[in-house]
Image (cartoon, rainbow, N blue to C red; front, side):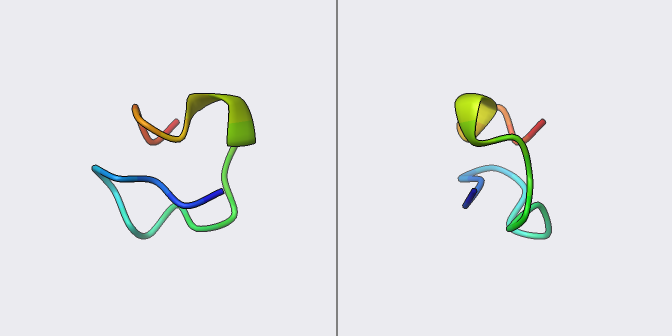
Length: 21
């Protein structure tokens, strides 16, 4: 998941991309 706020969370929780969780 590509996070808008924290680009380091490219492999993150896809549901919360915007928050970068």
